[in-house]
Image (cartoon, rainbow, N blue to C red):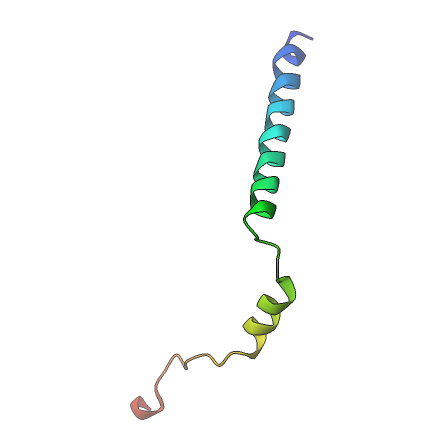
Length: 55
């Protein structure tokens, strides 16, 4: 029972830190264009791992 005295404030503190981190990411614009990043990842050309000249 005495462990709840320590665990409840710890859990509340972790929640507050998580909320502050979330609000910071929203304020800094991390979620502005999620669809653009996804399509950019799929449609950009990657460099080949092995050059064709080396084969």
